[in-house]
Image (cartoon, rainbow, N blue to C red; front, top):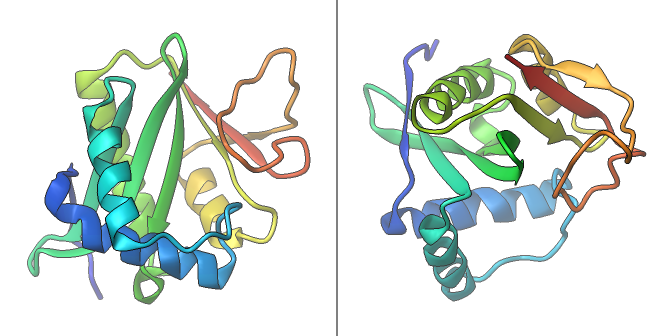
Length: 166
């Protein structure tokens, strides 16, 4: 049983790992975008993302092994409202590690950024992610375009929308 998870800020050297996680998702159908991302495109994307002040990316690792298992990305949607996306490599799904990684990443985000609310849109079929958010005290809401915000490519009105407020 793996129990010790830690998170660290992502850096340029995480390119290959992040590419692997994303492309596993494309094959498994976890993401709304179905495009396979090539490593050279991922390098450009990651450099751009890491330079943005409104984005924070954390890599989850198995502490003893220093083995990367997944990532959590926060992007500011509106004033003090952050949208979160996360992904694990398939071998780590269903073991409770994603929720540990998410909890630690939320702590780090709150330490360095002003946060009043964190939101997430999850595909209907991604039950593991839905459980992860519920385990971390996110509330499932019906998305209302007049009051809710999202940057996610998924249709928030057709997929589960989650909120975590302070």
